[in-house]
Length: 476
Image (cartoon, rainbow, N blue to C red; front, side, top):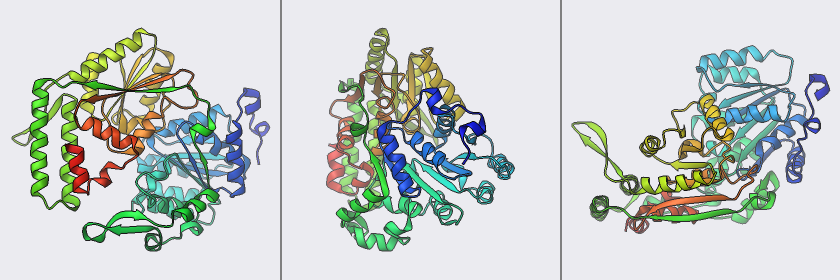
């Protein structure tokens, strides 16, 4: 194995960096497992340096890291910060053809190298074939819950990589291995180790899943949970922030928002129409889920003060109120005037655009902002050039460090428990030195309150709305 002296790089000792005791314990666990293991660590506990140090200690020459696009830069930055003796190739930009050419070029190198690609592209040709020829001896899936859908193209290719004889090390990193239910574990473990839950979904389903409900196809419960827990305990190193880190306090504050008369009238009318539609439906299956989830979306948009209108096949957005907007601006002003930096999480781009109009100096991270630009925006927050950051929750829930801020405002949230918990951990994580204040804006007597309660009770809304009673409870 090459040393830091061979590469001319500084050692971590020279740089003053050192793993925490629990991180060293995690590295030792991965070594004991031979690298075929899960690292189920909550956000902010330092999964990336743990994986890097494991790869440093074992005989790997060709590493492949698969992660969300927004996290590619994090891996490259961490490898540099820890002075890893790998030549790092972060493939975050360019076409798939260009990425494939890069991989083809570097596969003949005689140095230790690490290729970092995103889930959305690594399974597509010609990059897929280039990766197979690159013949990695270590594959790391970061945010491995991305392959929980066992029949997706990205999951299938991850499973293919795991079966290749030259892949000696398979690491699955995630803070949320179970986002919907224990069925999520099957696909992740099909990558890690086929000996744990096997290779056939039908066997897993019959052993651990209880079905019923409409048509007998819905998952209504689980069996063998003690057995599953035992298997996970011996094959995955698990870290919670509570056990691992001594973090400053996090203060969670619900901020009630009173809707104006016009917005309230529109809200009540939409709710009545939805309940009538539910009563006239068969109250089952996909049609029920579609009605409820669409209604929740529209009602939530209304609490934010806007509503989409379709006229002559064209959709426009009408602003109908600014109650939540004014509340967010007041909280932001108070925090900035007190010397704090603020992150405002929004589900909808229109919310971000309205906030940006009122806060022209604010930075933005959304789906339309590429990885390189995100890094620059984050740097402006860290430096203090920008005091307020507007973040689309589906984009900013992963892979970004927002510890430069100490105040977060949740303007609107989605239904995903995983995204919600990930977003909350962007500020309250390793590296945070201040007390974190977390505001949740909730229009009174609306779905805002119901969605927040469901998420804090760790309920998967999108799955539970197949129950008519649960669906009505969300809307009433």
